Figure 1: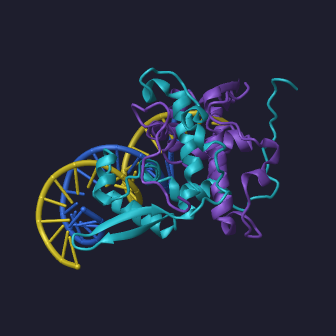
Figure 2 (figure 1 turned 120 degrees about the vertical axis):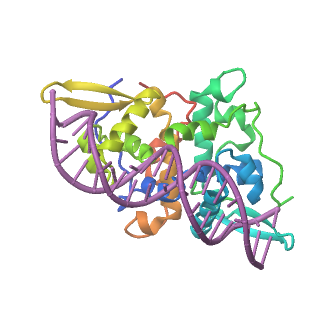
Figure 3 (figure 1 turned 120 degrees about the horizontal axis):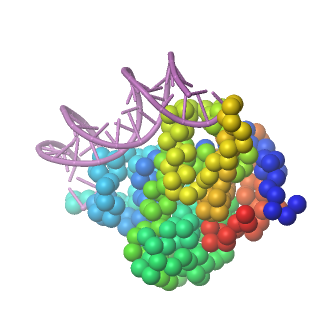
Length: 146
Length: 146
DNA sequence: CCGCATCCAAAATGATACTG
DNA sequence: CAGTATCATTTTGGATGCGG
């Protein structure tokens, strides 16, 4: 068997009636969405104009759309810090924090397979090397602390 | 400290010169791409028209585009099984297998946060419950066996 | 400061028919 | 079977202005 990859589908213990990847992508798969979550979670960039400045190419129109979608789907919520001048901070809900393993997966992939783009020295690194204090990584199933 | 979330950015041990999430998304972030990888890896659906049938909404034009992009970026490669009638099977390269943890993250997220869509009984499940024989999950850094 | 509205341009994707 | 060609539609980008 060594070296041969089975041609059988990889099946879950409990059948899916709809594909969870497709379901997740329906929300997370739109352009800019995961970068917005990255800003809020990793960079602590959580205000409208900060996010705009942090993500070159993103426009106010689309940011408004994405924030609405993410809020509608229960991943983020606004905190009104101050009115006049209005200050709003966006934060991840528990559900939103469930996306962190996906973001870590993307970091890990980029750090491994695009090291010349990601690192000055061009050397690949693993997520464990980059974020040792975060291992083991929580899975989406492990509820993040509020 | 309990219950308080630091406002400081979460920094990697080695600084990024470009964001690995954005870098990864440049390839993987286009519509249908991750579902195509899902087909090849999980479902063992690896031929053009099979993939088309497996992913409702995907059209031949876009599938052609995505296969070209994935191939150009080194994630998949064609195996010509037969000519006339032509039969091509697509398979993941090592780099392509590096996306499996991302796919698992999406599965985990969907199975946890959209259980009523994903499962007949509507009960949330973790990736460990669904794929016990695959735990611990490989990270993108752990080279998948060829 | 945080958005929303509008108008238009460009890019990405969808529908359908077709070829080697 | 694997992929193209052509055209329609949707989504996103860019600029600007407005209101709470």
